[in-house]
Image: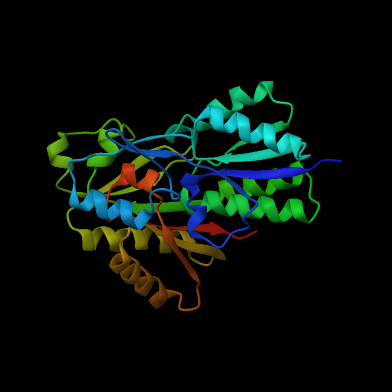
Length: 282
């Protein structure tokens, strides 16, 4: 009989939600020079964003979970009687985690199913929670993957970032037009494409206008749709309130889930970044 374990990477920010604690988390690392911290357990989002706000020239680096830890963890699960595990990862264009685990798992006794979420943050954590709940109810892998595919194909998020410095320094944004100095003066609106790659949609001059624009895009997409709405932010409570107020003026009954962008994601988008997004319900 199959026994499944669900694992998700910390880029999902699942730690900031109320989630079943027997969903495992593969934690990425944040590096400030010679200092290294495990995402969430050793460096919280609040402390991380305070640090980079106070020291804007100290650009952090990131790395995914060590493969030695992954191997040990999977071997321990196999000894506990698990036959299969489903590992949900951040989008492949944003990290080498998916391919690394897929390659490593070929030699494991436990069957490892590596799933590219093609996203990050709340939609990724939502996938993990849905998969966990379905397995608990007796669903098989094919049924679970069908639901994850629907979530993956029916979610979208729009980011307003205060600076492109972190995305550029960490190599997550390419093909920039103009000089870096020019880009750092604007408040760009970003999204992820269908494969999870960062795209610049618009270049806006003020923070207020960029916030208004991401809400406009969200409202255009979700008109007459039944959706789960979420806000993910880099410790930007004021922007969360402003965006929530704008959405509530149009859809007063919509529930809005607000959570952090975890430090590893924040290392790329920088302080004050914020995203509004949705997952269409089946």
